[in-house]
Image (cartoon, rainbow, N blue to C red):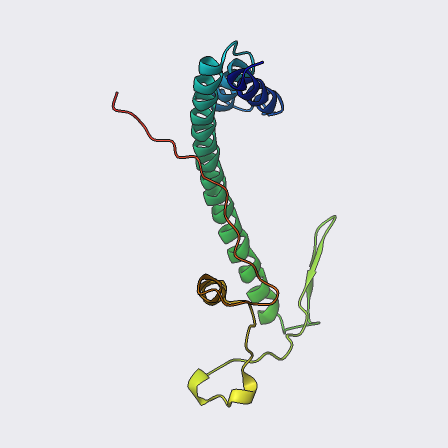
Length: 173
């Protein structure tokens, strides 16, 4: 087996392990391209079919992201409507005399007001004493990287090589 044959076989095996549900035409196309990739007979077709599958998966991902954005917009509309309805009922119960004065019932639900608790409202951040602030501690990777790049030792950190990245560009059609 040549090196090219081994690479193609490994690539086919990798694509054979990729599963994708059939949820829309874009995922169906990507699934078809994945199947093409792991059925390739030689090095060149395995490589080019793998690229075609990746491009189809990029398209399917973009379509799924658009679906998510549309669903999130619908969810926001419903959430806003629910919040307005809840606030209207809260105000109506407040007008009845506040917590404990009235309840509202349906066959399966009951609504009532609970008294509100105390909360802090910051009126002027600049006037707060330093003892009232908290500091978030987290490693400064940029600073650590600079120290390690200078050859300095930083206990608990190491400078490691990231794996190479795949770049896919479109050709003019």
